Image (cartoon, rainbow, N blue to C red; front, side):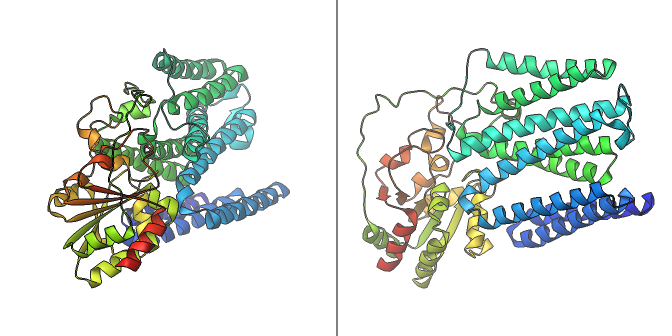
Length: 464
């Protein structure tokens, strides 16, 4: 395939990727957006293969590995439960970063194959590009692994800090710049390997001090890093599709991270620099007094809902764990038959990744016009009769507005406590992912429903 024809098809795939992002911005058009993304990637991969020139034995191995990897990816995507989607995203981000590192290593060890020069005489621009791609890729890989371990519960979700941590991070980031300069001036393989090793280390250190409350931002931030890593390698390979795709993923991920930080009242730079300046969580749980709560059952909850004129549903990660979205939809349909107005309130960081609750509700065919974001519905809580909180914790915690020592202080939360009655479905009084107690549990207008979210919702429906 000629270079001009390849460029045209790469441009077409780039346009399809832009349309994919546009489609994914709304649940109503997300399926169409996914289709555009798949079509764009098929075109990009096909053009890349046709541009190679001849199908040598080496290319056959590439096709075999592409098939194997595709089958593994399809199997994982088919089998993965929605509750584990954040871990899956973090895991896939790590693979994107690692692939960027491998391509950079290949280009450095065998530059002739990429038309970059010869060993010891690699083009300066190419050397800078592969250094950036390798460094960002390594940071993405190790950072995504830590995010995966935290989300999976293998590592504590609490911030892990030590004295001098921020100084060490700054020193390592500066050393990456120095190593890149030394590598470009000497082209020594020693500097190249040290650069990759330091980048792996800084990725680890950047993510461990970030707490569970900020994990959704970390996911979108790592998504951005993986895009910039791909773009850097795209310049090295002189591949238009990689440059376009990487730039789109990198910029959209960065914008999403900024929007989420703004929604959580977090500093964007604090988060991307590894929680720099974050306040440490006070360890006051040891002497915490046992406070009284009001608890009820499905019959009590059904009675309150029957006598309500409006109900606001607040879904959270607990709903995802219990896979209760379909049971919730059935309960809401029953309420509507009794002429009760029902709406859904979504916090931007509910769950473990951006849009987690929206995806679950869409899976249960909840109408999009009944789902509202925080800023659209927060004022409605004061006029609602019942708030039904199903597994949401940190995003409903009033302490975010009152306690400066809290790790979620300043984060906009749903004003659930302003409802006449609050029904809170939860297995126990255990803290949320941020590791702090929820003051909403102890409010006079709160009735705790201690049970599995799916079973409790089904029992409420029966009583309705």
